[in-house]
Image (tube, rainbow, N blue to C red; front, side, top):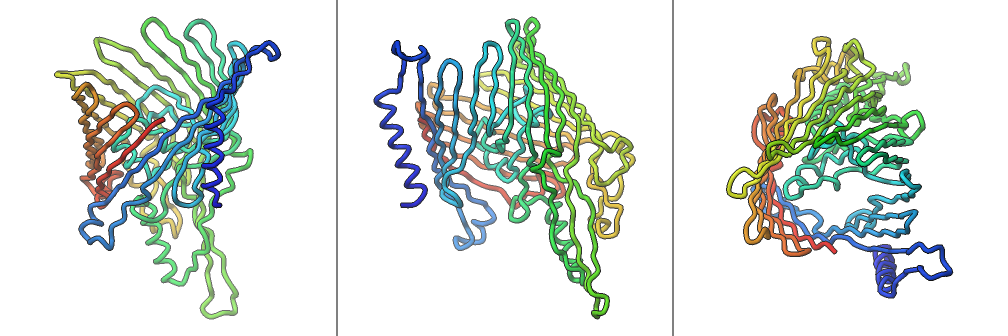
Length: 455
């Protein structure tokens, strides 16, 4: 019997046990009811890429059709244990998505374990939502037919404490004992252009007789990579406001240079070993957010100062300090059409101090991880949706526009929802400058169909 069969058997036993109940509320107990809840999701989806279709059936792959989730919760009046599992058909079939214990001490709540947290008020990818890294290889296919992007967040081991006071105020603290960066594909269709440029550079180096031995990542599991933050939120009148401080590591890698080692000098030709080093820069973030319903508009705003160690702006292995902000709203505009609009922008400080962004300069020195990029990076995201047939059928189109890069992503979707069943037809179409963050994926235009049952 394989591991998946064993797991499903255990799940079936648990479900059967739940039918008999687990309430311990008689006089012999402490008086706390013990409740177990089980839920989850079963999904069958296929995504196909248009460039594969054009090559013929022998080049077309639709991916792993089945995925699923199982969510378990056991709760009393003083504590709650949560385990959320992800099911799939490749690699190990059962993976832990979240697993943590939460305890209640009056106005104080303490949680510890593997968890995903959301800070800030932006709908998606706000500058203050920084605790969990992202799986960048899944972002666009998930955006096509999902409102929530929690599935692309990578859960982290952490301790989270919150203290509520007054009617609407809360202070939160979080401690993350180690660090994990964004998951960035190093090969395949979702590998970013910089990864492909580095591969070309390394191939050229090997053609010149330099043996590239490894891409060296630092050990980020030590306490030296621990992170921590504080957040305060409250309501004043009709406005929700928040402020936070966070110390951590930037989740995107920086280039730490190439180390060269000479081989045996008696050999002809002499061999040269090269090692490419990656870094993850520490930084401080100070941020503020605001939300309010004003004249029928649901407004949301965030502002953050990201302070790195490159205070002069001339260290190519460290990202420059920056200011990041987002501003968005949603509102029903006319005939039941809903508009959700959000602008995100990052402004680099000391931009005039950047070095060379030519990848070949990485071989000789002087390479700057931000060299050649614009002063600002601005992205506009707009979603227009309309529901029909007693809100069961939704027609939705989302567009993402990279202003400086002159590129975009269009994602139309038709979604039918009936009780706990959901069927979605969607797609993603990239256009614009092939050097842009979105335009680089012009060969990744895709169509997707998904059938999801939630229980």
